[in-house]
Amino acid sequence: MKKNLPTTRERNPILAAPLTNRRNAHPSGPAATSRLFHLHEKLAAGRRFTVPTLAHELEISERTVKRDIERLRDFHRAPIVWEPGAKTYRYSEPFDLLTGLRLNANETLAIVLAGHTFSAWGGSPLGRILTQALGKIARFAGDAISLPADLMRQCLFTPDAELDFEPGSRWFALLLECILHRRVLKLHYRKPSSAKPEVRIVHPLHLACLDHRWMLVAHDEQKSAWRSFLLDRIHGLDPTGKHFVPPPHRAIRDHLKGSLGRFTGGKEVEVLLNFSAVAAPYVRERPWHFTQQVEERPDGSIHVSLRLNNLVDVQRRILANGRHVEVLAPPELRAAVMDEAVLISKKYRQK
Image (cartoon, rainbow, N blue to C red; front, side):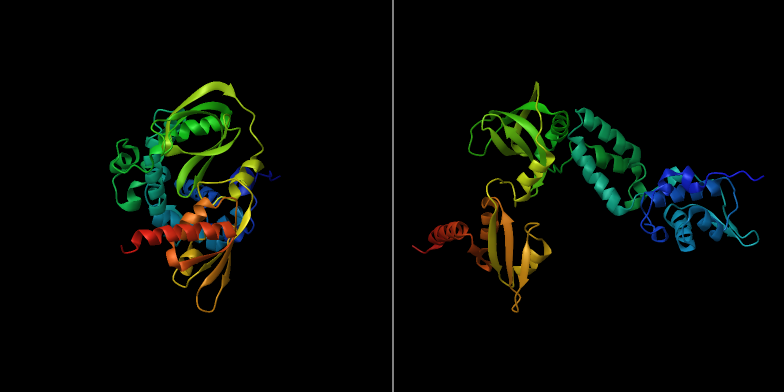
């Protein structure tokens, strides 16, 4: 009597995971990677198969099988040949898939950028783990952009790289650890208007990238309120040995959702703006805020509405657009922009 053996899906948890449409499986997702290893195992062991039989075994389309074979052969450079007589595929020579794995250009660039950032964390436990993990995959990146693996490793792990992406990145790992473990911190923080750093005792809650700069959202014990601290203004961090109970995650999300940039907090207000046809394409291309609603005008200009809880950052962006934007509401924002425009006009008025 024939024994019922487990199917490939039952043996492989990745293939067993439900897909919305298995016949349109993503060519580079986890399931696709698992299929490539399964295909490699068959070819390396010399097992015979046809496209229809493998498609039936994996419960995918024949087109997907052919695409996987092409990817393994063309991208990973596997020596796959077709035997017409036996109607099967085989390796023409021994092949190690792991040494043949390659990253594409975008993946390689992402690793290079991440490596520069992680190099600033080298002294922390998380930094050492991340650096070790990148080291394991650095050798797979070489062929993607025609760089030798050794040179790629230098790009990834040179701590004195000329390009410093952000001075505050050296605090990133320690802050992550303190957020995760709810550790109270003594923060040495220097404002632009201060001659030297001041000490703040804070509960680190969240790291957020606002207005293209990383900042720490924390509860300031002295102010008894939440404050945002730019990482590149931090001059020192010292755990106090104390712990805190964090607020619900939803509270942090609600605190940040009305922010356009680094300033947050306060009551939400509706901001109404008119942009000229010159500025409109840039506002469409890169929305100012996730609440942005755009009303198109026949002449190419647009009417924009936003819901924000602070007007400092939006005022700066409005001024950066000059005469190509007009504030309609709220009244206090319109008045602030008008006052600033008057002062600017006075500076450039001929004496």
